[in-house]
Amino acid sequence: MLETPRSKEALEKLCGFLSSEGNATKESNSLADLFTTSTQETVRSVEVEVAFLVSPPAHRVPLYFTLPYEVLPGTICVVTPSPQRKYKDKVLQLSEDGNPVAQRVKKVIDTKKLNMKFVDPVAVRALANSFDHFILFGVKKYPRQLTGEFLGHQKPPVWVPQRGGFKSNLLKAVNTVVFQRRGHNAVTCRIGHTGLSLDQLHENLQSFLAQMTSHAQGTIPEDILHIRVAGTNNMGKRAGLPIFVHTFQIPREVPENGGEEPVTKKRRKDE
Image (tube, rainbow, N blue to C red; front, side):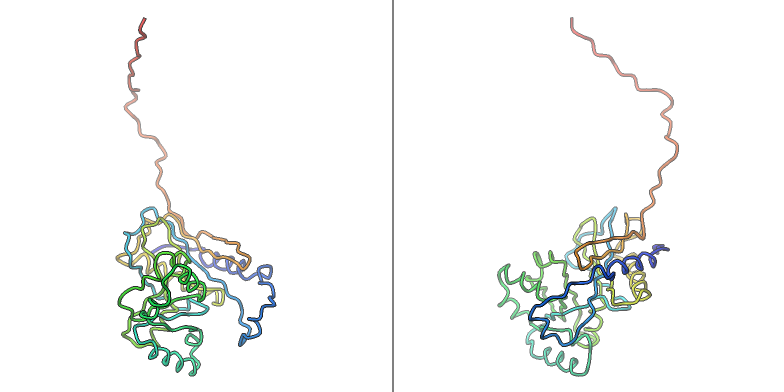
């Protein structure tokens, strides 16, 4: 188990930076503001940056860690098996019942229509910029549109199985962290947002660290160089505060060589 005694203090200072009045977004006069249903408080993502001494073995399938509190705020696109109408009806029913997660689902599309509509890079880029988060519900084959350049937008989709029911898995998905295993020497994971309380963020952080270091395919504390809590404010400025650093064992005394210096032969100059 990682010891991070000052992690709560770091989260408090980070949230203060992300939520300070100087970082508030400027008022816009766009027509989109006329059609918003309610004014929602702007929340910023809280992330964890993990740098490795030895990275976990590379694998195309990421690890998914479920945390106690919400990780994914904002709009959602749900990708489902065919036909999509069945899942649209479920989302509509949950939304009418007042489910807050279902009310944030702005698009439901099945894999068949995804392959037909989004074929070129421009369309994929537009798709990535249209929604904050993507959830794959019971999709057996990973859509190629959600790989490559799509992952460059830092929006790794959350995959959830069909078993367990649509409602429970939808709620579980927004509490899920995607831990990428692409062989890189660092990984960044979203663990919450400024809409959560400090205690909730701290609980999410400790749960993430515990699962990351205890999972058989995750990592171990000895292989971690440092861990930081980080975030980007509304002005585009990013801050990261360290909560864990690797301790290197450096010997204080240099071992002796037997006291003899190696004898080097002098080269003879040709006369």
